[in-house]
Image (cartoon, rainbow, N blue to C red; front, side, top):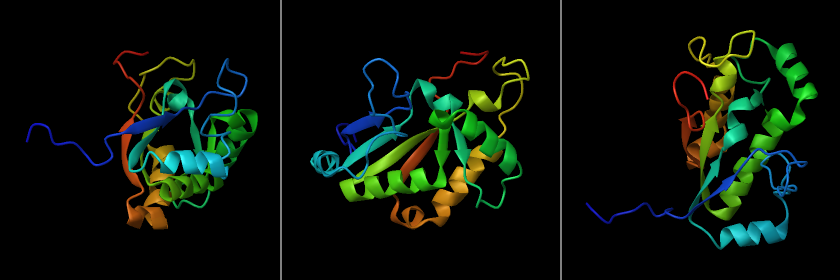
Length: 167
């Protein structure tokens, strides 16, 4: 009916901007101190809420989940992550994010990288169908974790502010 909203109507976002980006400091999902008691307490005061993890940089993120059954290019993923650690979500960091959300009473809405996985060898966007293999490793890990059973992740969105034909 009109006027009904989810219990978690309130929401906040964690982005992927690097520490060197103006004004972002260490607030990125990669850099934030998710064990900080002040951050946890502040977030608890928002509960229940949606924690969106996304933003402009979300389409450049690589998921480094070597334990996932479908990972075929472990060396390539590790190399890419060593070259651009700010653009790499590891299993360990994702576990921290999931634990943080659980502690704070948040449910996650996560932006899956799209453009990175549709580019041709020249970097042109939307050149072929989305290659979901890397995202599947994240999804598999999440589904098989305790957080998959708890419903810590509310949902996934494919890409950030996509427009067909490139960004």
